[in-house]
Length: 196
Image 1 (cartoon, one colour):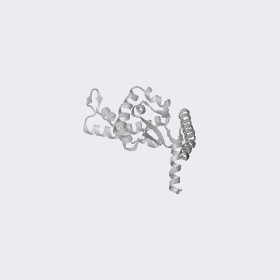
Image 2 (cartoon, one colour; image 1 turned 180 degrees about the horizontal axis):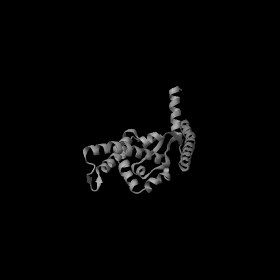
Image 3 (cartoon, helix red, strand yellow; image 1 turned 60 degrees about the vertical axis):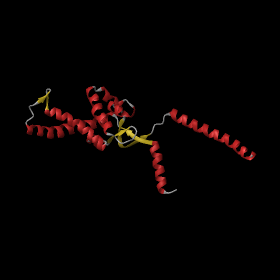
Image 4 (tube, one colour; image 1 turned 180 degrees about the vertical axis):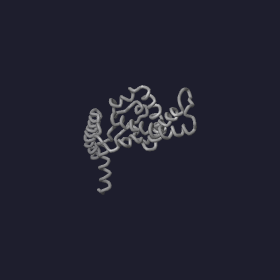
């Protein structure tokens, strides 16, 4: 066997035995706080307020909301959608080594990202409980992850794959049955050939 085929065999075995570790509540929470600081201080605080002040729109409102609030709200969602779509992570997630991935390991589509970040985060912001379920769900998924079929993982942390005992048992039982059936059929096939 060549060295390349041994390496690919080892990689396939390790991929079957390990999976990327899901990110828990607290690490995601701190990454989100970092993102909020970046958005509020850098994007809204420096960029938006400077532009609004220079344009003279700082005292104008729409439905009792200032232009700074409206643009800040838009920038909040644009930041999360664009960063997640193109990089799979925001700056806060980068600092903590986290990444958003699809449940079926495909690339994140625009519809998935927009749905996850805009719709899902809106629900999580209005009702805080859906975000708190991160600590209690499989793969530590929040409502926005459940809606978009995504989850957040540690980029460089792996954990052993959990194999459902019933699946393992059924598979091994099936394999044993097929092997036994094959062994029972072989002698009868040999006898049929001899009789011809």
